[in-house]
Amino acid sequence: MSNIMESVEKRSDYIALKNNIQIAISESKGVSVFSEKELDLAGFYIKKYKELDKEIEKARKSIVDPINKEVKAINNSFKDLSSEFNAELSRLNEEVSDYLREKRRKEEEERAREQKEMEESIISEAEIFNDESVLDSIPTIEIERESLGQMTSTITTARIKKWRVVDLDKIDRRYLIVDEQMISRIRKDYDFEVIQQPINGIEFYYEESIRSK
Image (cartoon, rainbow, N blue to C red; front, side):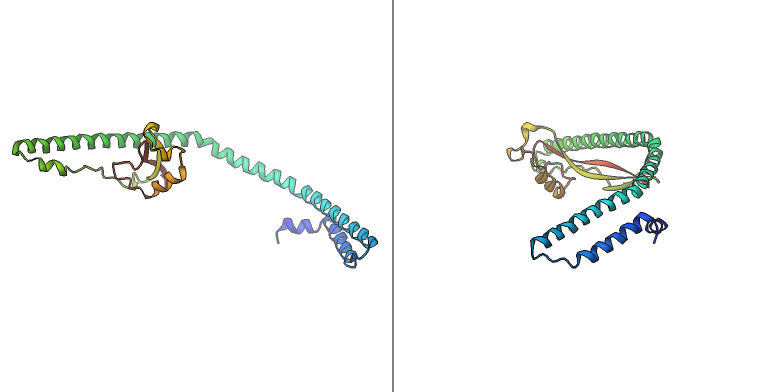
């Protein structure tokens, strides 16, 4: 038993309440309601127990309220410690996010450039050899990415599957509520490495989540 609880149980008001409860129980145990007189007596003890309950709550608050105030003050004090660096933490997270977004953008640009060069080369080859069959099997260049990658010795990233509306006019009428639960279920099953989006007008994408080791 904690020292606080031991001190509470030794308080005179706690002891008095406990004694009054035992006395009330011993008295009311003999009450059975068979008549109006006994009904009144039962009502008397019901009222007495409600009064005891109020006294218990009053005594509890007299002990707990000052403790709660101290706990609140302690919690606020530690929150204030965190608040001293929250702005700097947010800035660093934004710096990392900006860098990763720019990195992804450059990767996409490079992929598009390489894809275009490959397609132009295949088209040129088809014209030279008069063979258009090669046009039916033009491969797609994919960007190699880690679903959870080690960026540095202290930073890791996790790509989180998300979606957002990019063109409301192109969204199938079935999704115009928008049914977020349905779309979120599709998001879970969708292969994010596939270029074709499963719902017109909605973009399924990875959002970088910054994690510090």
